[in-house]
Image (cartoon, rainbow, N blue to C red; front, top):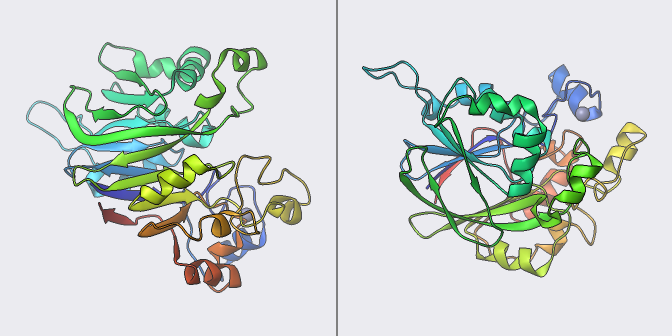
Length: 312
Ligand SMILES: [Zn+2]
């Protein structure tokens, strides 16, 4: 399996359009010891020909253009084509699903989501009708938590990639009406994804983790590569830097640091590669000259950058 990290930042990206935090200011001034990042986006493929997206970020158009494998190829019959066969949507957050709207233009696609997330997008948000203007445009497949499913192309061809979802979060985005929220299944709000490669190796993708429990630890320890929630360094990061806001915990993210943070809780994980991604622009570990960056690297973790790729 080929895995490409097209975007490694949390919602808003780095720098964020309305943010003048020390990190964003320094990056814009050209004095930052670290890299800009687009919003979290992963693409996977078993053959480097047919690709599936994990989430669809608001930065998807630029991410596709900077990734030659995802460029369309003209055929004798048509100039319209895409190597992108579909997307797995793990939650209904705007920074995780907005890119789906960018994939309209009558292109056939497979979309995998829980019934709850599909109802939010396809039934409550009329813009998504643009993805279903003709037959054979967007084909929805329901994800049942804990059950293995295969990623299929819009024509029904098996990609060879097997997935299984675990429930991570129980909170729906604030734009989902209270009434609709009462009709949805809490466990379907936010998922982690385990992807099995044809080689038998496992990728675990967990970009939004509210708490670390035994189920998560078991899944993460079986993975060959773990892509894990690195949104915030500390629980009160936004409040300290912005002067107001929510804690990491209130926003559904276990922070990296502190005795109950992910770095401590996952310290004994037997996983060959542990990579933080979905990193907020305020996070001090983005600065490669910082003590926080070196603490992460010394602990054996990596910090994802846009454009990384690896084979599993
Ligand atoms: Zn910032």
